[in-house]
Image (tube, rainbow, N blue to C red; front, side, top):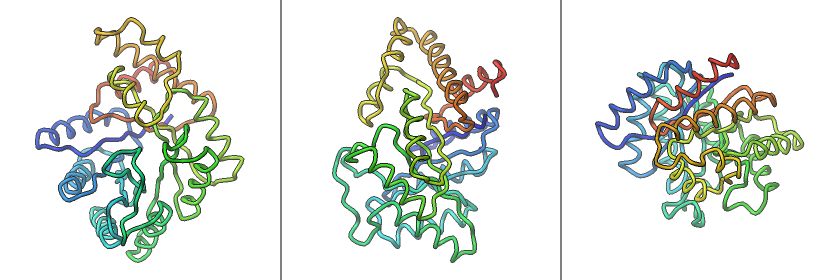
Length: 286
């Protein structure tokens, strides 16, 4: 098995210090990649750049920088691409991005910006060619349908367009029911889309907060997950133990179905991700 992980930009100097320590500790996972999410807007953008630079220095693995096109002109997007290339980043996670009002709000492209994610993907490829750099592009995929998509079929068609534009990898939104990931993989295969599909796995740092977040982003909560955490309320030790065992079981089940690479959402902490990978290695599945 191979593992990568995701972090988000730190907002304070202390947050950067904590993120640095987390990335140093996460080197024990032997990650293939760390992805750093992106915040549009002046201050958020600078925090994103600072966290990308921090990852470059301390993660001990290649860095993939996220880039969204929501609320940005084409010139602004190209400036961000150039900044990443100047830092030596050659892997970009290209995303449309959510409106400031939230994931459920209608998407309105910038009047001088990209209309669709595939346009952003094509622009990144073009910019790389102009700079003499080959860029790897990852995009998003949704096992349970994007909240604004009319159907699962439409989701696959959107993914196909992003791959046709130059993306070679797709990392999924978090999910807790493996059947939805395997069904997505089957749909991709049926449509002959040449893309590596990597499951996005969320180790449950807080069961209550995870339930709320899952509801907002459209990830279903299977009854087995509720039962798994039954009786852990108010007991942080028991909740952590159940989180480790659930994530271990989820990854092992996917691995038994031919999945070898996993993208873990770290929430800028290291302990839980490290615990999960250590447990998997102890069982000799890694």
